Structure formats: structure tokens, C-alpha cells
Length: 100
Image (cartoon, rainbow, N blue to C red):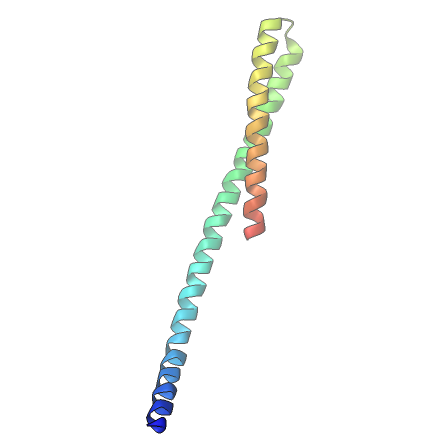
């Protein structure tokens, strides 16, 4: 009876070792897929951050060129929205970068 248990354990162990390379390959493929996905998200965020910086610069220049208080308030509100989104994007970029 004890001999049968030892043989069963050895057989199960051999099966696990045979399946292990396939599992490692699948796990590696999944890991690579996840890294590629994260890299695409990071690149997208970097592009968005650059666009937001450009918009912020344009609005700041418009603010310097106008003397209209109403227009300045509108531009400031828009600049605040852009700055807020830029901060969110930077935090998201930082979180994703730590995962890679």
C-alpha cells in the first residue's frame, strides 16, 4: 500500500514537471502581453501630457495678449481644467511606470 502511494506521488510529480515548461511559457507570454499593454498606455499618456503642455502654453500666451477680464476668467478656467487633467495623467503615468 505504501509503495503504491509512493509510485502515485512520483507519477504525479513527473506529470507536473512535464507540464511546467508549458505553464512557464504561457505565464511568460501573458507577462509579456501585460508589459506591452502597459507600455502602450504609458506612451499614450506621454502623448497626452505633451498635448496638454502645449495647450497650457497657448492659453498662457492668450492670457498675456488680452486685457478683457471676462476673457481672462474664461482662459483661467480652461487652464485650470488642463492643469488638473495634466496632474491626473502624470499620476497615472507614474503608477503605470512602477508596474513595468
